[in-house]
Length: 185
Image (cartoon, rainbow, N blue to C red):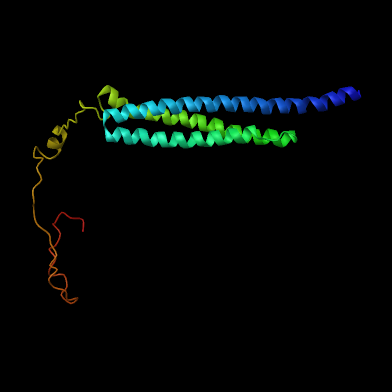
């Protein structure tokens, strides 16, 4: 019976050590994936720079800055993960889980920012609605003509002004034109 209890006590300790090493392995894979996305992002930025569109470049560069910041966070978390002292197995597992969460969250956000950067450049490659050379804006004012009886021009109408030449506080409101009769005021 004593062997069985000792076996139960030793099994979780070795399992925790294996799970910390598994977390380190998972963290390494995630950081490698992040580094691959950073390389792809750098290529995307250079393609956008060659296109010469400052709006698209700004969009992609903003996403790149976020990706680079998350890369730094994940690399720092990986260093912390690899440096965890495993003498206290429970504390080591908790610290490892914490650092791995930082890495995996960074990985998902890096992928999200990369996808957003690709969406920024869709107009560049398609030449369409997001800013390509063939993009056109067509306004249909037929509904406005119907609503205003066919006349969509804006007339000057009556001028409303305030006579600022009189600075006397007793002058009253004589210098102010009244609002038109249709005004709610």
